[in-house]
Length: 282
Image (cartoon, rainbow, N blue to C red; front, top):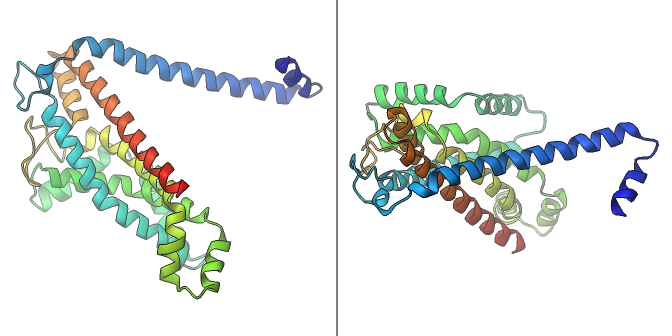
């Protein structure tokens, strides 16, 4: 009955009906591709998961991914620690302090949009030439962290900027009307209201960090052990999976690593979404 009612609404408007069918078909295909991809990874990887793959030390026998997991968590936390403050404060300047129609603002926005479209391999080469060669950091966790921070900075800036723009002007006017200054209004009223949108950008940044391979091969290196300091080399989980696939000797272990990587991304996104929901409700 509901289907008949929906079709009746498009009577005499065949163009709208065609567009609606195309939208539904696109959504269906997207869901099918997503389910197929996730299902393929789980089917190929779960049977090959075992406790030996979670040993603290990597060997050619156990092909442990635990050092890569620790390195992934470390480099993700450090990259966010560098990129989030710079990205958020830059967006605050663009939205709250820079004048509307400012030429500098247009240049910055054009630059960030351009940087967002640069392939990660280019960031890797830039990080290699600057951090590894010019600054002499060699292949290290710090070189990889700075490269990834630069890579996700435009994403965090743009999402934070849109989140700040979405805050109603009445919030600002009300705060000014109560005698609050510009700085207090930004940090006590505007930023708390924009936190859900900011966290959405952070979640996207985390997803890009965890899944990044090309930029880290040239900066953080592919050492199989846990990075003991900022200037130690270490591979992340995605680089670990790439190395196993490129060697061609551990295909089953590579699929198992993909399962762990998928689960890790889901858990991180779920935790971030839960925090964003709590903050929004508050």
